[in-house]
Length: 314
Image (cartoon, rainbow, N blue to C red; front, top):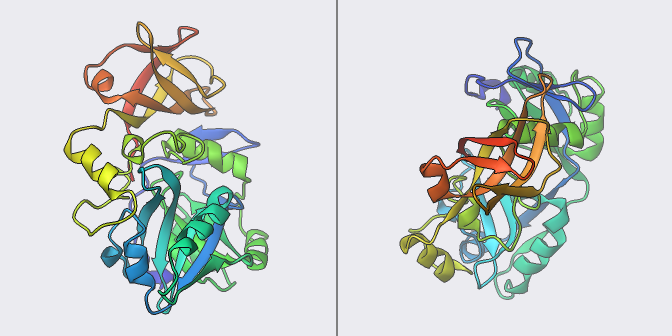
């Protein structure tokens, strides 16, 4: 399966050296990281798809063995509980979410499952190996340890993948892979690339549609009912989306995020920031759409200018 993996041409190169992320360099390296901040869940049972259809924001019918989906689980008030990626591996579904929210997500999904005949829980023995960069396909082909599932994932470069493997096998694989990095390296690389993360760049106080759930292909407005749908649909159809997450460039040294962004007054928030080897600073910012569309001058409180590059998207 992996020999036939087709990945897009690399447009943005990111490499690290002792916790410094490098952007747009002529030398190409690939980051490989054991994503211990992620948790792997498994769900199965005859009624699992029908049940999840009433719980998640994306349409479960779009999920196939060759088409994983990104989605979210909300409260009845439309607030975020957790986001996750779902992979179809046949008799089971693999759910990947942040470890911080895994227990809450499992509890929430089990709460209404009585009578559906499903099994769902964390699999502590499984983890995620993230490979990001031009050599992604080559590295996958050289891994000899068993790979349970894969998910195309461009979190720090335009070519990337998450491999679901046993944690013990991830450690073995990394021993033979060049350019390994730790979580802090990869987190910096994701910021430089413009990939937002729930819990870092936004939280449950922000409605998911104001945090680019549409741009991340995480919501479907044509599917049936799900928990939180009424608030989410009303916000969408009534043009209630006023803010988005944007990839930005910062003129000056990388600030300690989060910190306010202002025009004449505070209008947004720089939620994360990182500096590359050329001493250029980039970040993720939560900003009013109107201000961005009107090219409103933006700066930090210290006067450093903020340039909006693009809205964050999948």
